[in-house]
Amino acid sequence: KREGQTVRWHENGRKAFAGQYAGGKYGGKWSFYDTNETQVAEIVCKDGVFWEGTEARYIDGVLQISTYQDGKVISWEKRRTDIAAGTQ
Image (cartoon, rainbow, N blue to C red; front, side):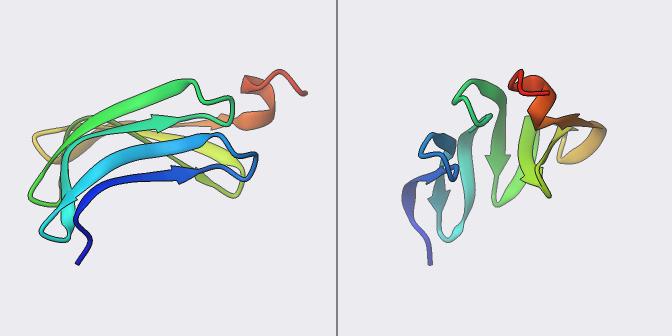
């Protein structure tokens, strides 16, 4: 089981996300960063569930952001990373 703090990195060596595991599940606060290491989202997890706040992840080079309330997705959006990074 995963336990404690974790940090993952983008391919460019900058921080992608940071959070913690408790009993092998997501727990506490998680922070998410774009490829320039600017924080783009933060979420609180309860017993392995994204509970309150915003979560972000890259899928096929596109930043996808989901907002959660009471453990349910209430909105989401996609952002092209090349535009956000100013490399059109």
